[in-house]
Length: 118
Image 1 (spheres, helix red, strand yellow):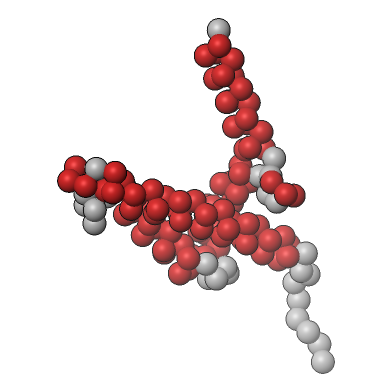
Image 2: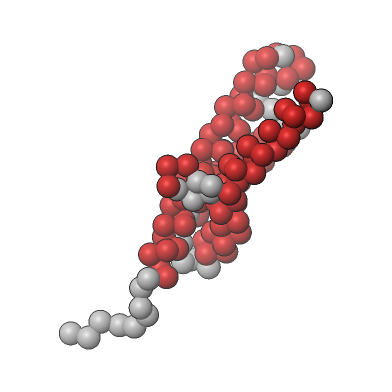
C-alpha cells in the first residue's frame, strides 16, 4: 500500500511539474512542445539558435554514443561523471534555450508585419 501511495504521489508531482512553470515561467510541457518549433525556426533562418542547437545535438550524441572519453567499465564512477555532467549541462541548456525561444515567439507574434515609411 505504501509503495502505491509513493508511486501515485510521484506521478502527481511529475504531472504538476509538466503543467505548471516555476516562478511564472513556461511549464516543462510547453518547453518540450516548443523544441520542434525552435528547430524549424532555426532551420528556416528565422531564429538565431543555430550554434546553441548544434552544441545541444553534440551533447546528446555524446551521451548516447557508445564511445566515451572516460569509459564506465574501466573507471566506474568517474566514467559516469562525464555523462552526468553532460546531461546536466544539456538539461539546463534546453530549459534556457526553450524559454528564450518562447519569449522570442511571443514578441514576434505581437509585431504587425509591414514596413517603415519615412
